[in-house]
Image (cartoon, rainbow, N blue to C red; front, side, top):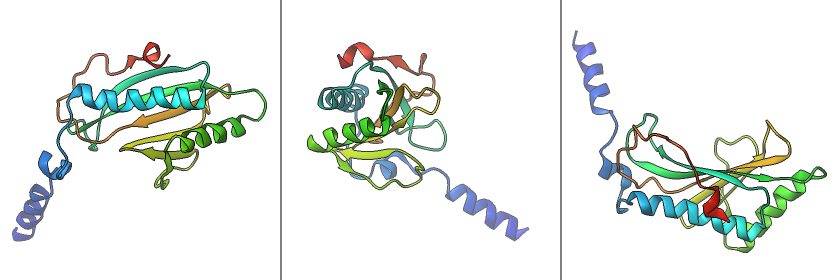
Length: 164
């Protein structure tokens, strides 16, 4: 019986940490700040790499394994690839980003594609496995938005017009 109570105490005490523990010393971001962080980065990437045939959507994603705060802004962006040598185009996009201050980031847990970071924003991108005519890019910001986005409807919104 005491073993079961001890395990129960450990489980109860090891539950999700408080928001202040999750954020550390960083100040929370408003919805607008979290969105602007990644939408602005997406716009900069589109311009720097001269991306064509772009479409994008935005959502707040939970930084926990659940759907609880904190959240991060995230942009899912697709861009066109040439029929010949799409891998070179993806490398050219990375080079253009690096020329504008992005740095290679460790690819922990990723199995393919490239990962770059700048000013608290991370971008991963690769050839779209479902449609070789496009690349898929995920741009995500810092986990500092403490609003409750569990019931956002729709969860994703089209932001393509904001990137032109």
